[in-house]
Length: 76
Image: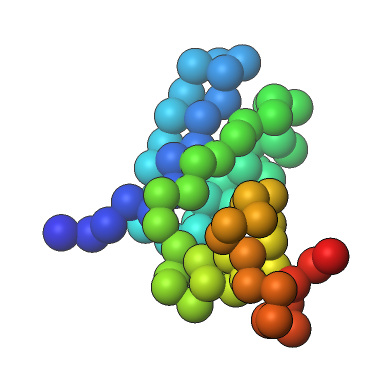
């Protein structure tokens, strides 16, 4: 069974779509914006382990306990 990786929601038209690929979700958001002028948002359900680790190392979550200050990705 395919895994849902992103859910896109447009509150302006009460529309929700799910996607297996992040690229498809992003394309939907852009197409929807072009066609309707609405700003849809997305919720990412799971990223690859490498992307999650890079984000944590870079400190993107904002919590000091989940950052790796020794990583070259860390943003001070």
